[in-house]
Amino acid sequence: MKNVLLHLFSLAFLLPSLSWGQQVADTSRFFQIEKAAHPLGAGPQILVDAGHNNFHTAAGRYAAFANVLKADGYQIKDSEAAITAKVLSSCDVYVIANPLHESNVGNWSNPCPSAFSAAEIEALSNWVEAGGSLFLIADHMPFGGATQELGAAFGVEWLNCFAMDNRRRNYDRFSKKNGTLGETPLTEDLTTIVTFTGSAFRAPDHAQIIVALDDKFTLLSPQVAWQFEDETPFQSAAGWHQIAYFPFGKGKVVVSGEAAMFSAQLAGPQQRKFGMNTAAAKENVQLLRNLVGWLVE
Image (cartoon, rainbow, N blue to C red):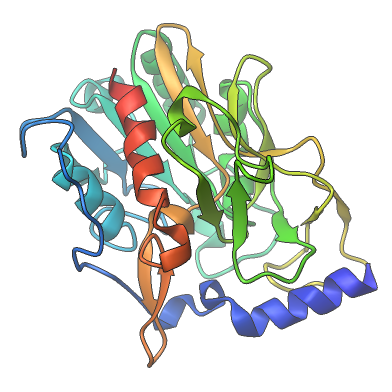
């Protein structure tokens, strides 16, 4: 545990994800799409949740997420409304990225209550079961905690934790070459993807697993985000997942325990790239396109 903690403290200086206040969204066209999946501006409708204190929205830190999908032909916008059947009826895909309960805004410490009411969870579950598509993303603590009750409605057990690589790497790389990137229909055209810490969950048995964590990762559950001590509860990440997708009734669900991998940020005074705009994560753009493409099939 001591070595893991030393690694975590070193990451506090290496990872730009710890300097959220110094980050701005990269709105440049850093990606290339040779052929859009849909006619520009005429594709399926995507709503991005912006009504639950979300850390990532299309107009904010997920500008690159939105720009990639717009370039692929999708129509995408934020929604600040509560989740209701009426709101959901206006979209083909509903995206939730890093929601927070109001008590955790500016207070990333336990407890981390659900960001969603029971009525919202029921509305979303009913909509997906009837044929809707959900893209659910919850990063490291406190976001995993805010998503636990919603995830459970879809058979996902979310851990409110930090999924930390024990190998002292700046990024978490998953590749087919070393067997860490799942062989699924949505990864056929991929060789390597990159994540940036994140959380962990257990997907339903029938899910397709894109990223499965192993004992080279440790799951830490601190009382306060990014404050790791000798007493911090921890466990091996073996048996836990970070990206998966599965059918739910007549609908579909994609779940990701990492948000930065689908963002693009410029961090600090040197505007250091972080997210899909880094050279190491160039295939994350295609993964995003594949996931959303599956959701609207």
